[in-house]
Image (spheres, rainbow over the protein chains, first blue to last red):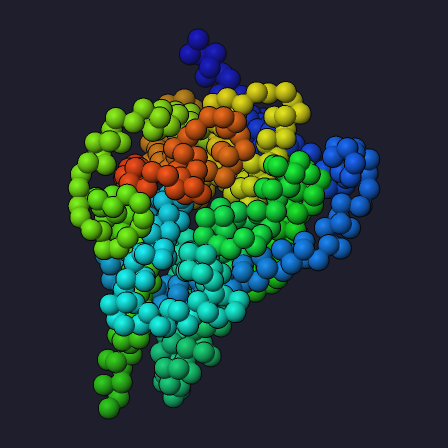
Amino acid sequence: MTSALENFSNYLYRNKHILLLLFLLPPLLWLGIIYLGSLIVFLFHSLFYLDGFTGKVVYKISLSTIIELFSSPANIDILIRTVMLASVVSLGAAIIGFPIAYYMAKYTTPKIKVFFYLAIMLPLWSSYLVRVYSWKLILAKEGIISWFLAKLHLTWLLEAILALPVIGGPSLSISYLGMFLVFTYIWLPFMILPIQASLERVPNSLINASYDLGATKRQTFYKVILPLALPGIAAGSIFTFSLTLGDYIIPYIIGTSKFFIGQAVYTHQGTAGNIPLAAAFSLVPIAVMAVYIYFAKKLGAFNAL
Amino acid sequence: MLFRKKKNLNEASLGLKIGAIFGILFLHVPLFFIILYAFTTEDKSYQFPPPGYTLKWFSIVLGREDIWNAVGLSLQVALISTLSAIVLGTLAAAALFKASFFGRDYITLLIILPIALPGIITGISLRSAFGVAGIPFSTWTIIIGHATFCMVVVYNNVVARLRRSSPNLIQASMDLGANNIQTFFYVILPNLGTAILAGGMLAFALSFDEVIVTTFTAGQQTTLPIWMLSELIRPRQRPITNVVAVFIICITFIPILYASYMTRNTTDTDGSSK
């Protein structure tokens, strides 16, 4: 028995391509058939259309669903709203995440760096739902932010912010501002880690050279550090942007009644039974991300990962 | 003058320190509030500060059979998905880490795709595929979905370890007279062990609280995150939800901390070698 196994393993050692094939076959079959298969079948539905009278899917190839997606103003609204939100969230995450990444990359001892690393990894991997839930407590009308601002006699400020046209609403937990906060909070770790990695590769001598040549801190930051951190920001924004584009849970729990792409997909496949339109909506984040990744790659984002 | 400037530059400015501290607080303070709210006596609203503190919600949750069933289902799913992901992810990593053949990049992309694409797309795709194939929803349909996106986590961890470990070790083992099987069990597996375990831990945490794909592949079954989601959309039992949230924090923190402990020596070299 053992010798048969040994002969077989020797055979494999000498025929690396057969070993490779044996290794690759199970994951490839799984992903190729179960995952890719169902993905393609689903996305292919965007080429079918829903019969307006019977409410049934007509399995004939046509562009009518895709035309419907881009011709209805309500749908265009959803697309623009989602892309805007994703952009603002990426920007917010970059601004909040940069100081942590910079401090972590340049000013920490190895021990403190491990602490920072853990402080970022824990939220990254811990429960998404619980983290969204915590903001429901914080943003609620009777919740923490309201209490805190009342203690500081700043309730008028909150009211003024909520009265603002686009970002405001009846309370923080039913406003775009609240949604922006929650999205930024949830995806922040995905932004910090690539920025940190790219800053870590900026040699200190380069920064010192900039100072030696007479640049101020501000000049050094804008002319040396920021350009070199840009690939990291681009890499992080791939995550924040893509994750925001497809999310449907946060807009459901925290947010207005206005739809985002994820919710549109969810409703169309569910109650409406309009799988073709749901598939057409799903194509948008995929297409947007393909374009986004193309440009991020030009910025060197993939070297920062 | 010059000396003072130099000293000044090697220390973080006040603004940077404040920014970094603010960022860390922003990441962590919300979770503290969840823990605080688990003890509140208020059960109708999210009133802050809590009017009083009590432990009674914990004992009520202990007696709730529906929650324990959801926990049981979630654990079962996470366990089987993690084991499948470990097998598939490790195999993929072993095949791809240094091989170069036509289509290799496409296969890598295919492995990453399930977490790169929005979960809702994966979920609906699987759901309609199950529908077309006539497969009824069961624990196994949830597991199929979870194993698909957990694979990449194990893959990433194992590939990172394989890239760092030296192929000379294998040669040395064989030069010293070990056969392939001995080499595998005495050299390769111990070398990869912690990476596989760490990847598995993270996959477990990921699967245990996954809700988006699960929504579409669970049918009428209730995993813990699905129970949680329905409470988030229509809050009916706020204090119970708070306690369950604390429970989820605990059960996901343990594998994450363990995973980072397992890979603690490698993260440092990872950063500096790049």
